[in-house]
Length: 165
Ligand code: FES
Image (cartoon, rainbow, N blue to C red; front, side, top):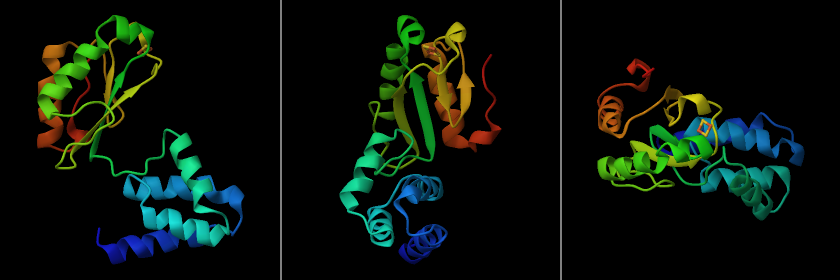
């Protein structure tokens, strides 16, 4: 997306909301959805529109896990590190991802293809350990399966990848 496209998209999103601070979260969620993160320009423009300090929006953006102030990768890899998954080797999956992608949880690959996140229980404890890529669950995952899954997402659209049982 060019800078001009981004600016007009930001204006479109912000323009859809009244100048009232109660719409701040909704507007930021829209930006997150549109750009996969909230650009600095978007935060500044929203603060001006709502007539509130940019610091307030910054606090909200850092508080809500669904919002990000830094660009995320095309593919979001979430490793569950809840108790069940942790006990069943979640951190071994993280180590394998580090080997495959060269990044730790919380980071994005330089080519912008993958972001890795460590998350709390995803509600599938019986199927631990769980890794979720772009919303697709890979359950009872073994470390040796990780490289193949990552390769699949790197090579083709996420929607074409089939989840493991
Ligand atoms: S601890 Fe991982 S799904 Fe519950």
